[in-house]
Length: 517
Image (spheres, rainbow, N blue to C red):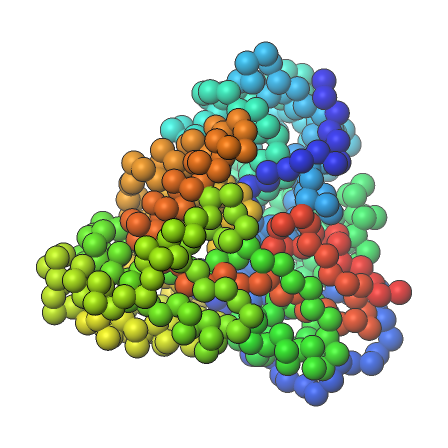
């Protein structure tokens, strides 16, 4: 039996990407509040609805991990240095050919429904992998690259996962949302998770929560790990508008906030601290590759035309100074990044028009994209580039959260920030399967490259597979990258210590936020 080492290298799956955001207005202010440090409450300003799909952690991606790690425990945990350490599983072992992983479970863990952790509960959770709505489980479902063929109770404190093929290092994936465990009632009645969580995490959901507006978490006295979290209460305040979010931070309405590049200088000028990390590519995502919502999008040449039609560098110069124009789907520091794409798909409106003509759209076509306050300005800039080659993109502002998230099925194209900390996880959880591909389009090259990346046994094999994946995502037009953004976490220096990221993960650990004194 191998005991988990907190310094072990990780490759935890990160399924990032919130498509469109709900709308909340926050008041502005002219300086950080000078009130005494309040160690009882931490308020985090976030750009998206933390629980848009309810409180089932397996229906979300790692963009929501920070919120859900307050309510649920993982079988493995992401550590402050980016490595993987023990969680609900205290140890693990593999059989000789790495096709069976056996986990040893912590004892004395209680869920909000009163149930306790045991091997049968873990099995009940993983047996939910047949549900196609659970994006976190898509990689381990039947046909997935990390398919789990059976889950077996070895003893009350041991459970084994049997894979369709060797999966060395799979335990690292259990530090993502894939490894979050739901209590007995929630696992048996999954519909109940739409309204209330059923976890064993360090916090519980408070009744003062207002869905889509604010989520209030209170310290869970039954959690042995609650002491690792400094604050008695954590509030996730949903503030869609970037400037309103920055204003809320400056005025002291929130203690920590996600900042966009245009608001960083403003926040810094008001004395706000800002921590930064790269790796997030803001990408237009082809939701529809089959022509169901817009016939033109069924053509790969049409989707390629978008790559040539958009002046990315002009977009960055005008709206995102300090960020990086992107022609690669994967970020610059990724193993799969290739400079060749920068020149292959360089701005070329004439090429875009030629491709449209070859696809039968010499006179262009029209479609609608749904926007939010966060994406509106970028989309309006792109709108002009597309119009120049004959593509009319109508930009419609979402009137509700439901409309925003329904756009994946009702419109052909979306726009979202994607974090590629673990490309395999993102591909299986959101791109090949999950919420960005409700039309269930297939691409043999993308599937093959993702499978190769999942099975890679060394860095060279991983680089080769990810390069294929990155190239095909762009060539196919499944992804239309625009720019790579720095992730900016602003924080009130009078109340909060400098924010630190967990390795290369764009979302700090909830436990990492701490009072300034």
